[in-house]
Image (tube, rainbow, N blue to C red; front, side, top):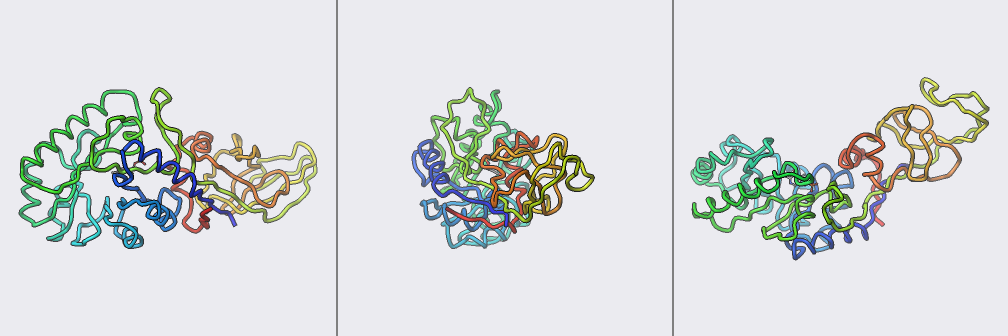
Length: 334
Ligand SMILES: *Cc1c(COP(=O)(O)O)cnc(C)c1O
């Protein structure tokens, strides 16, 4: 079976790097949305909790329920707010406030420039009034940077807007509210972090998308994808492999079929610019639903051990390569 091997050592190494930036691991909220960026929700939640992380961030209540015993609080980014002692819910819109259950713990998202989610700063007063009126418990106020991983001014003016929002919320008399804006790129570039919490995803899994100009700490990929041999055959020169026969053996060669395909979330890619595995083997012919072919007869092959490098070959980003991997693939922590 294809397997995803998770390195505990590398995960903890990355978390240590982030803790150096935040000043303590108490300030890290680990983002575990989308099956922990494909690494396995349960596996990564357990490792993070054993490391001493107390806060998590997920996409929906189903994910939160699966890991609720492992964390003190869990922020749910996209689900209806209900009253719960562990879960808190991001409010992405005024309608989220209207639909929230009285007593729910909520974190108001303010749109400082990303223009995806969050209320506009101009209606902050209205949102706060509605939160009071509906008897919601405001436990956090947050924003998200649109380009923390790029040179340019947006990171700075978004921070400024958020500072103004923080002042207003405090002036309005709300207490015990945590303020957070930083994702991975933001914390990696910031040497003066002074917020309550960082919502860290990709950096914990080993990647930085920041350009080289930023002096960022080294990180180590946590995930490795392997596949196993299903069958082997010897081809004569001119024989083809797979659907459409796109690959034609240039010489007699020994080839094997491995148990990974687009049904597992592996990218089908381009037959004529084939993906080359971590061990230097190009995928031969088209990717099938459950199989690929490679030269040789090794029992187990490493498809990638660096999702960012794999992503460059596939014309995408590390996030997509990893989150696409099927939940059905076994995750093994070493
Ligand atoms: C996904 C997400 C993060 C984590 O982003 P990374 O770039 O992976 O660190 C942080 N905050 C919010 C609101 C998110 O949706």
